[in-house]
Image (cartoon, rainbow, N blue to C red; front, side):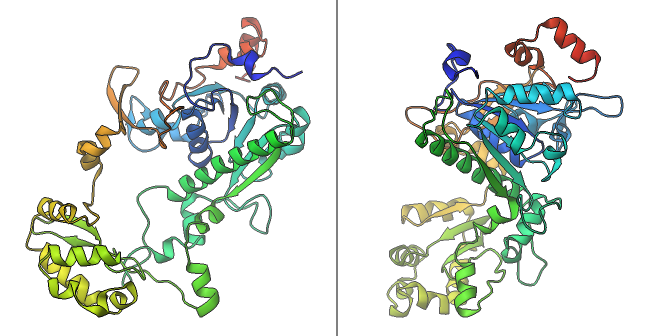
Length: 422
């Protein structure tokens, strides 16, 4: 009989509304681990499974060595694996698969982002996991989903952004499509995965289960495709194409069909985003830059007219911004209740009083005492806020602890280690 949440949590001080939820993470890199990170920030007990170190390689999630490193470990890891308990298991070994199935019996959610079919080949597909725990929610994140002609193809966030339509509309019309210097496709998919998991858990509750993990209710698969998650963010582009045949194009730092909303360069060389596209806001913007005449023009009173005069409006705003320093521009816009901001670098974010006031820059320390800042937890909940309990741990840091909770003593764990299972 699977243990209940009340039996396994005891007096666990973890914050957050998900503190009685247990999540098993199978996979690596970005989308799956980011989804479990978000669940862990609100208290879920996330157990991350990684491959053991071998002579042929270091083992573990490849993200441990991505981007900037500190003492051989990615600084990104501190945030991506925070609040997780990390164990090592060889999923190709029968003993490793048996441990996964034992863990699944006490889990509410499994999150995996392997290529479709990989877990099935290992004997850890949905049918096997559901047999171990009928109330399980299995979140499956992949490039193109679990069905369809491309299901077996590898797919990264960059491919999802391309196929989902985001890249086509990003950048300057005279240049190739651009990407953000971030893995947006993966992060967008992770957010959809978290939403899907929580919706599926709500269904489990509605069919006789308990959100506190005491089991019962109906589990299900949550199928998240990266390209579909990106496509879901494409606003009205599909409707515009289906009705009028319009294919939205790249338009630089402006946005199609909304005027004015653009980035303008100040006299000191900085870029300022000004979004004066509301009717009343536009009038306030024009008066703030000394163009009462444009504020009074009837043809510019509403967005359709401003679209026709977009080039003129952008020219007028740029001429004014180009005579002032960025700080003066932002101050004038805020005084006029016009949304505006300098375009921030990460250094600007760290210095910004709004981010600081809301605790969005968390100061922590790495294992060697080196200070490191992590992004704060989003969203902010009044009664059950999330938090950082510990930073991303070393490879296999919690193996003995987690296996001990399954009833394996030190001798059994040592035997598994000798056999290369953990």
